[in-house]
Length: 441
Ligand SMILES: Nc1ncnc2c1ncn2[C@@H]1O[C@H](COP(=O)(O)OP(=O)(O)O)[C@@H](O)[C@H]1O
Ligand SMILES: [Mg+2]
Image 1 (cartoon, rainbow, N blue to C red):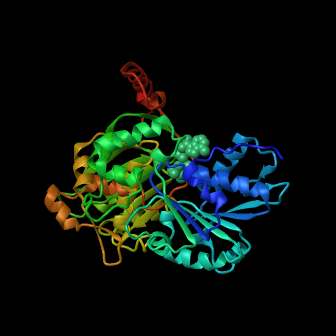
Image 2 (cartoon, protein in one colour):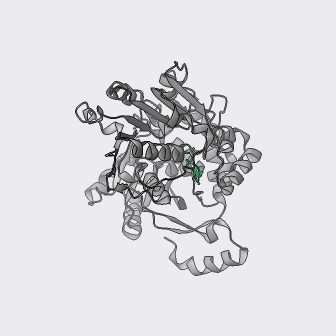
Image 3 (cartoon, rainbow, N blue to C red):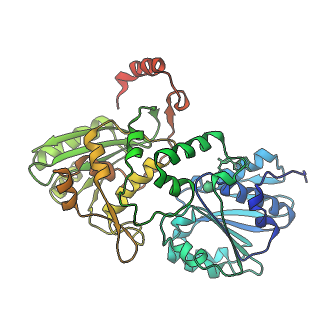
């Protein structure tokens, strides 16, 4: 077997060298957690036969998993003893096997396949529900088996944090790791982190230093994140088009369509004083012209009538009706659907590659006006719509339409094309903008 020298930062040494029931690493972005876990597991799997389960809360496709990271690391080190299959990775010499599963999809039958697991790696553990953990923990029952957890904390009461890390026992190794502890942290990430520290100390603590968000950070959406999203940077994208449709309830509200393709939100269209048939006609034209993959519409008020007309016209595959007040998809985490969708805007703004919004000061005001709170169960809740209306003097139609584009996950294989990899001269920008002006989708 080929001998390699692993590139694993010192802080992660106990992963391979020490025996613990639970190994728990948490911290901000780019701490090197994923790489260190991947490398350590690959090396352990070359020494002895192991069954390794790579787990997360939801895995709609293998693309959501660490499969690609493991395959990349195998290629990087040139480990010919590993063979990468579409849904598993095997070591041809030791017999080690990596499998990949979403916990949400595991019923009591399927979970049995995890009973022989030697090491379970839970990635993005901040999203693991209490229920998933309660099913998983006793399932990893083989003698000497270990559970490895990597997490970027979201809230004070993330279920797995409460269950495992808040009061660790001596069978638990727990380590906070941030980008400053990662000797391999790319310069670009360090730059982004330092910039965030200067411009936005609160989100810096959360995103980069791994601190949970606290109730004191009242604003749901950070103003500078919205400002940054207004900067023009994405030339085009291959992501599918999703449209959010917020339908006016009162005379002064506007019926608003929001167009979003992955990281690029390209435009809003607003209409005032339209009846149901007129709104349905506009929606029909938009669907026929732009061929969205989905159109999510608010059916709390007037919208129900519009929904029925569109369904009757044969657009049932494309349209989905959403009640802002209904139960969230992740009901253990969000007070209702509205809070869940708005929080998705928040994540979308924070994630990389950087997102883009059309520059619109009304949208800015709407996005940053909303305060968040936590209900008795610790779930994220937005302040009442009436309060927001008082502050804005109107209803947040643009932001609600944007929120609707996040109503359900849409399978997205797309990649945004950035101008000059994010760096571009004014001249280049001008030229490419001219070239693209006729292809406005
Ligand atoms: N062992 C390593 N060798 C080379 N680069 C690494 C290594 N560990 C981390 N990195 C770099 O640091 C970045 C962040 O690491 P990652 O494991 O994704 O952090 P985290 O999971 O904590 O967010 C990676 O994208 C990679 O560029
Ligand atoms: Mg990671």
